[in-house]
Amino acid sequence: ALSCGTVSGNLAACIGYLTQNGPLPRGCCTGVTNLNNMARTTPDRQQACRCLVGAANSFPTLNAARAAGLPKACGVNIPYKISKSTNCNSVR
Image (cartoon, rainbow, N blue to C red; front, side, top):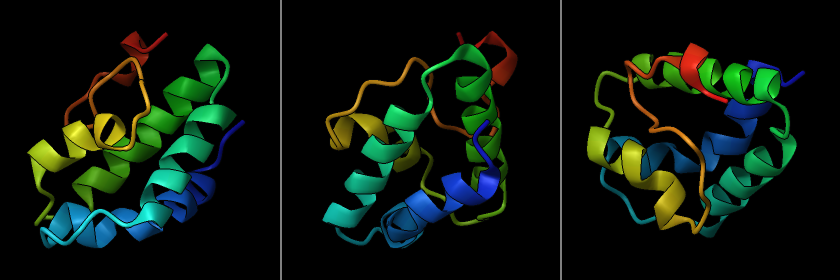
């Protein structure tokens, strides 16, 4: 199963983009793509989702629109929106 450490490590390059309106670094999209490729089963996708929600809630200055749009900005399709309130139990 995916650990939150793995999720956080893959998204570390995204923090400035998501919290300080910085540019979108290539390393951030590499991490998003890696995570998507790792989360192949429903339990893995739910776990990744829970980690993302936990991470989102740990950043008071998170730009919600940028978080929600991150997968699309990186050309990755994930079946849920990254937000502070996503219901990860409904992720399939």
